[in-house]
Length: 126
Image (cartoon, rainbow, N blue to C red):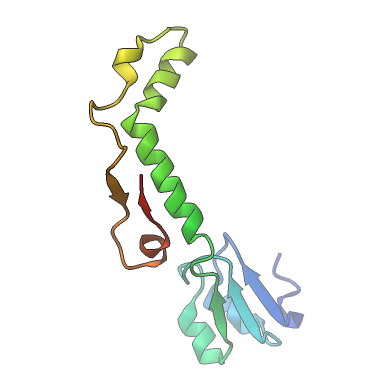
């Protein structure tokens, strides 16, 4: 899989580990791009020592992740997964059991607390 590594000018890493051993084979590399928010799959120290710039896609999916969190909050608040599971198992759930809490979300503020890209991505008032 890595046999062409010595001739690569650009290395994109996604879902695999890029080790120090691989870095020593990347003699032509001018940039290593991690297609993720961090460097957890790349030996960043080896990249730094080799003098090769290392880039990430930090923040690229922050809005999508924040929106997904809100979707899951509403899903769980309304107990939709439980109602769906009851229907899939052949039952017809009593709607009162799956209405979620008595409190409506309308007029309330919900948010993600954090100073990272996801925490700053969405500020929504329903």
